[in-house]
Image 1 (cartoon, rainbow, N blue to C red):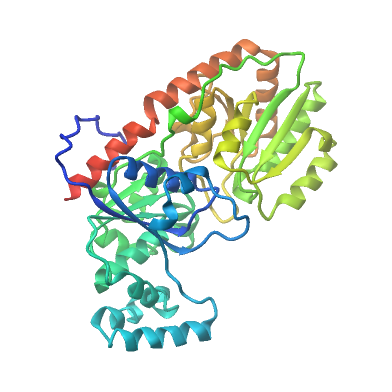
Image 2: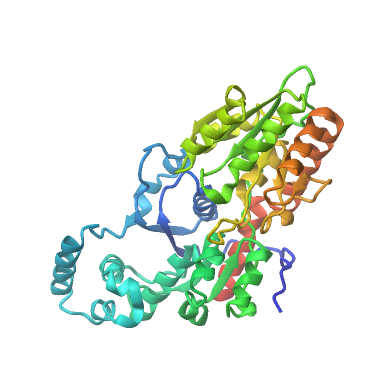
Length: 423
């Protein structure tokens, strides 16, 4: 049975231990919505490790990046797969790789049909060309299960060397496994360590065949030094300022957040709602705000950098996190934005969704409602607006919860322990 408890922190060995050579794999990097990947990388660098970043493709769209990407000069550590999107160009490129590599064994094995879509698409071959000349890594740390699956194939064919560690973040352990229960059969057999970001996800991995002895729940952390705390006590003379930070997709439940804000406004509460993020549902959500008569109370900001979000959090009273299980089974993992908001002192209103109750304790460090429960979300917002003392209590308790359990410094030390236990 999976033991979801984190091991007690142990004293770190003296700094005579050599730095680790770590490869960090991500699908898209840098991505504004995936601050946890950036935080993981900067934490490794702060600990003195040698880090190389591998990504399938650069982030599309808005060219802005978080400040730490430039501060740590991560572009110098970043390598892309460099596979053409066009099938004909991809085949031509594959032919050149095989000739240049003189039909070396890893290159030929990258075409083995046992490696399924990764081989058929020629992704393994293009990755092999990128990786095979690299010295061995101590750790190959993959964000999301599908990335881990590819890395496990690459190690098996001899394109890369090192211990394979995989972070599962949400969709990869929910919707992906619902669609294909055997998706990670090979990965679960050969991977060295699996790090779901919540106990909820860990239990799902076990149900799908992952060895519980190779699972360690590893929550995503928050750098408390970057999130200044201010205890919130809303002023009844001003509208309750509510924030949501999310991709505008089904799973994030923003439509239910808008309905809850509309219901709170209809009950006579002065309220304004700021939504940071973008996605395919933006136009329907803007229309919904108009239909509910709250267009003048709602601001859609699009994406912002982490520093901009931190500044905005400092101006707000509460975070509304109305996530739901998507129509395809997609669920959250351990939402970082909840912890960041709590660290700044925002009172949190969220849904009982996936691993959220591992972060927010109802009535103690935040307020919870069931998924799609517009009445419950609206009543929680009304409670914050009408009871400043409740808001202040939740504000202080939220910060204390994050400091005790989700401080990134402690979690980074624990991750180093996990790494070294593999070596």
